[in-house]
Image 1 (cartoon, rainbow, N blue to C red):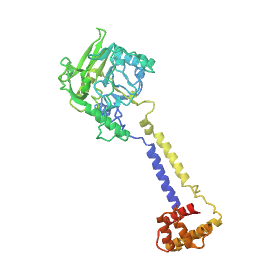
Image 2 (image 1 turned 90 degrees about the vertical axis):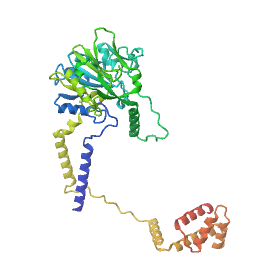
Image 3 (image 1 turned 45 degrees about the horizontal axis):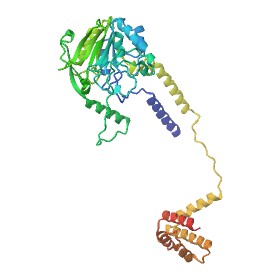
Image 4 (image 1 turned 180 degrees about the vertical axis):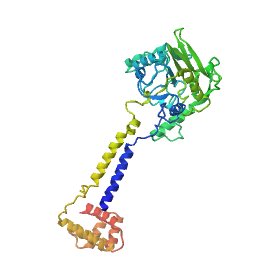
Length: 457
């Protein structure tokens, strides 16, 4: 009965371990990214929850842009797509073309571009989609003031054939320069330490700024200003929006307080429009409730979202795909029923009448003369006093020396060992103490006797 209870306890423990290992994890990423599943500082989960609470149709879009044209749950026009650049997944030429057709139907793309910041999520990936890949579709380009436009080179990437043609433009700001660690601070030993050091360096380079609407934008007139963190070094060469066509129209929306630096534009794209914001985390979890940031997003939706339209968050290019949804997989009742049946059958198998987990019977080994000698030696080692045992070991050594060197007695053997060049005075003293029956540690004495036998016999 005790064996079955013990087996049942082990079976339950194993079952709990399996359930724990198969349960979906909600661990936060080391680096926060602008997606609706991220609850970190740069995530957009707070914005999605707020919109759903206000009953604004919104969802996570986890497919390539080519699926925008065949999405059955969306209206043909009046939708808003929120995308962050640079993205983690590369955007192909077919996706850019599909996005241009989607815009032409009367939809809106809200672009949050990392132009005046060095966000951590834009620096630990190698795939960076330039903002000019989107603007060139409408014959616009974004360039830095005081810099000549650099022509794009489609051969600089291995996948150049899959990218949209980019209008001549200056690329986005380079990555943040490497931060030299101070000598007083210890180097981080883990990846988490490197991430924390990078976040501290990025935070130190940012300064809070206020974004104010221009007087010529009536639907933003009641806003006092939005709050954002901007890298001061990037303001030395501000970005400018330009076009080679005089028919293109763009409306400046926001500028930095006290300056003429524009950080947001409204760009016409046939029947649709592009809202270009050069601050990537203006509506992130960390800044959404600061100043008038939430009201600014509400005004943008009021201007662009039509009845029946939806707010779509581009999560596909930040690693979330509709091809596999762990939440739907683990919430499926068929999975729970299958696991329950398997667990029940396994438990019945373990606790069945036939005990298949019985211990293996070991064969009794045959005794030899060596086993008898070992048992006898262990018996005498436990019964003899340590002084008597030490004296017997030394006496046995001296007898072997007498026999090997043809010496008359044990005293002569002890004298011969005292004249040996490889035996120290301390070793000889230990031999004399043990031979005289004095108290001595047996283990060091055994090592000494082994050494003497090695150098003399």
